Image 1 (cartoon, each protein chain N blue to C red):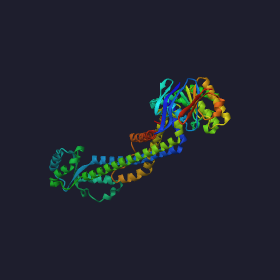
Image 2 (cartoon, helix red, strand yellow):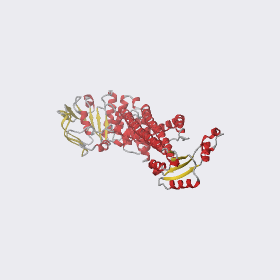
Image 3 (spheres, chains in turn green, cyan):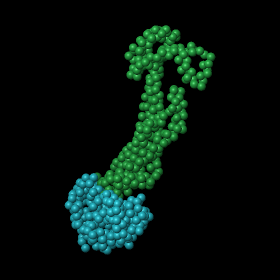
Image 4 (cartoon, rainbow over the protein chains, first blue to last red):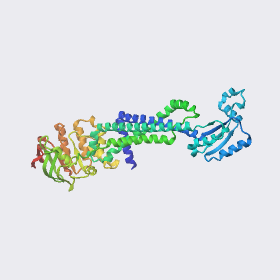
Length: 299
Length: 221
């Protein structure tokens, strides 16, 4: 069994060695298609991470023009905690807001020198339960009835739009990726067909000495799968190099503005899936090309 | 060994390549199929190895009806056949050794057995010193000897040869015929299509003549 496997593998490798240009064309096609797919996947994954982190941080902020007296504040806190949609309520005093802002400015914190803590308003940060995010508007409306709460800010609408954008990006990625993979499949099929046309006499000779269809086809199937796997590895390498040299910089700069500091490459399972997808495209390409090519009898 | 009953083959409507052929070839017999181009010699050989299906009639091989043999069983039938073509049909990207070894690899024989057998057959056809060459590095005669070696390596029950000497000079033709004679003497049934009358005179055997797809004569020496 192992001996047979090695025999077919060697035949597949020999086929590839004899048609280096066609093999390279198949590998290149799969590589380009999957690399583009990988770029999209990197973008989608990172934007997804961003929205996930935003969603976790999503809070309704009620700015208080005048910080309330202790008992009043406690009453408000108790009342808001009683809302079923609310996960937590935190009071941020003017002093705390001032400290946070200093921290966020980092090395530029000295800009605040000379300004007192009372330049920033106190606020209530109300975090909603993840499952209650759809009810943000209703919570805001309820909070708005307390006129003392002042201005209410929340990022829900913006997040919704961003999620819609993410959905669009994902859809475009899948559609474009699907199209590219399909194109790769067609090109791989035709490339393998070309090699089969060139070897038609050989295939005929094989059928005449008693080779079964599987015996003839298996090396070509292995060849297709190998080309696909190598194409997948090329895609992985290309996308990694592009990620290190271009994507991390450009995508990083865009996402940095939004608070994400590191851009991630594809996770390991996705990398494996990418290479496996290459193998699958190659295998399918060979399978389609071989249909009707190995004929034993002119029925 | 081979029995054809009322075989008709039509590639186009109302245009028969073979018409109503009935023929018996006994085990161990050597039969020439002769006739002008287009008489149906190659078609008859193709029907015997199931490369074509007859339009009408039945074909029996070693007592087994192969007329409607399912396609998946054709390879197994061909493992008992040796087939030699006028244009050799060798695997040009493989060495002489690999070409001759291929039918045995197909049968899943063991490596050591294959090597032994291939060397033995290549010695028989006088090409043991060429085993690492590729077919295109050989002369036409040598290529045909490789093709004969490939056909004989499986010790076939039947050897089908379609104009095997058609492209060869007289000396090489003699060599090939000696090989066929040897195989025939070892018990292989041989059906050989040729239009070389001189060859038939030199190696007299049973001659089945075809003309316009019909048997026009059947004579024994």
